[in-house]
Image 1 (tube, rainbow, N blue to C red):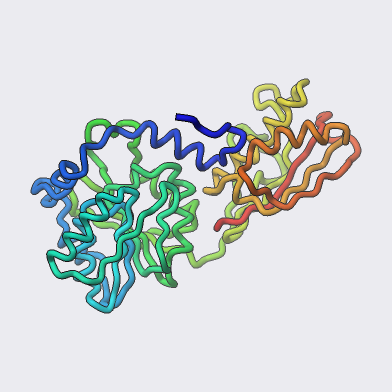
Image 2 (cartoon, rainbow, N blue to C red):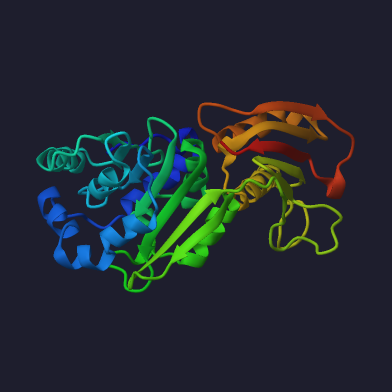
Length: 338
């Protein structure tokens, strides 16, 4: 199989490729469906109680991300009634065909299937509720994926997540995460936890809503000087303001002799601050680069291009006087969460 050059890959796509290559092999669809609908799993997930706990109102729009066999899709559709709709969302066309067939057999007419991308559920319209059940661990780069769901929620919309908390299936070792990790992802993604339920024996069950408060969050990377009179970034609502950043070696506190290494350290630092806010380089909308030696313009661009895909943020490249610590470059920017 031929893969594109890493230079042309966006960061999120590259992470998705790495993640999906590490996924454990899945049984053929018929066997997988039997497993998903197995008596032990159905009993353990307490499907009816979960649906009841969500307090679904007639006519609501719901998205079931990772719908699989439709185990939850069907009762969700019954709960929202004929005036509502449930979008069964999966990356596997064969599983979606099964959902369609099972809905027809049970005369459930308000289910719509959606073939998703690995990094985008492609929900056709804003919804009142997104459920992600035993699925989030299969999704690559959750700190970026989860904030991206906000644009699919109607005002007052919720995200309900159920996943393993104690015993994980064999082959899932590399995908484990904790409910505490999830809480961090959601907080960084602009959500507030509104409900938690503890009646599932091997799964956590948490519900989140987008935060209504536009509070500021101050982001600082590990290893920075404790007395520095500035933050590495300030997140205000959906906008992240990135402080000016040098290409300093964290081990020595000095700018390396290699200009290429300096550029890499500087851009990697920007990428790390973005990651702390649940963003990637693709969230950048504006960049300013200060350069003490304009003859390095082409060298900078050659490295800079490798951090983006086909689109770039707006940018100014400015000649400057001497920079701190003898650096050749300093970069600052603004990023916006989609």
